[in-house]
Length: 320
Image (cartoon, rainbow, N blue to C red; front, side, top):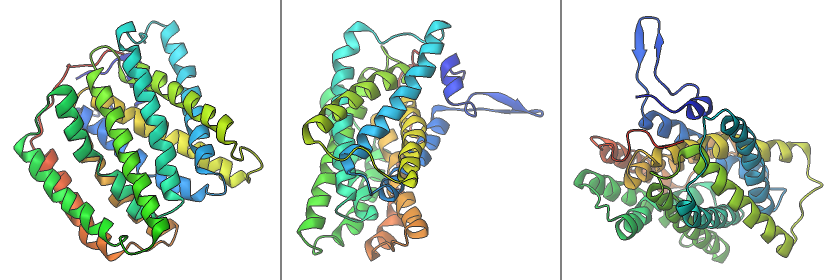
C-alpha cells in the first residue's frame, strides 16, 4: 500500500520502503499503533504542566498543533500534494471540532480532580460509546470478535474505575468529566469515519484542530483563566503536548479512522489507559490502585482479542 505524498511527510517511518533486501510493508494498523503511543503521553504532560489551568492548557495545545499543521499543510497545498475539504463535509468538520474542543477541556479538567489512571480509564470507555454512535450514524454493526474484545476490555475498565467510587465528591466530579470527555471524543471520531471519503487525514486534522482552537480561545475570553506567567518547564510540557499526543498521535488516529472501523480504532486506543498508568507510576510516582493491576491485563487482552482478525473497511487510500 502507498500513502499519499503529504501523509508520507507526516508519517516518515510508515510508508513502504526497502531495508536492505527486505521490503517492510506499512499499513494503517502501524499508523494506528504510533497514534496510540503518542496520545498515551497526554495525561502525563497535562499533569506536569498543572501550574496552568486546564482550559489554558487545552487552548495552547490546539493552538500550537493547528499552527504547525496549517504551516506544513499550506506548503503541501501549494505543491499540489494536498486538497481542501469538500464543501459538503464542512458542517460535519465544524461539529467535529466543537466536540474535540469539549473533549480536551473536560478531560484536562478531570485530570485536575482525579488520578491519571482513573481519568484515562474512563475516557477509555470511548470504544463502547463509539460503537453505539457508529451504529446510529453509520449503521456499522460490531463484529463478534470486536464485541468479545469490548466485553473483556470493559470488564477491565470497571475493575479500575471501581476503586474511585468511595474516594469523595471531587474524585466523583473528575470521573464525570472524564466520562463527558469520552462521549465527546467518541462523537468526533465517528464524524471522522463518516467523512473519510471526502476528507483526508491531514486536511481533516488541520480544519478540525483550527475549529477546536477557535472554540477553546473563545472560552478563554469568556472564562478568563490565567494564560501567562508560567515557568519554562510548563511551556515545554505544553509544547510537547501539542507535538506528541496531538500532532503525531491524533493525526495518526485520524488517518487510521479513514481506513479502519470505528470500533477497531477504539479498541486499539484502549491501550492508552494502561500505558498512561505505567508512565504515571514511573514519572509521577503515582501508584496505580489495585483496580489497575487487575484491570490492566484485561484491557490488554480485550485489545488483542478485538483487533485479531479485524478486517480493513473503507477506501484503499483516503483522499489527502
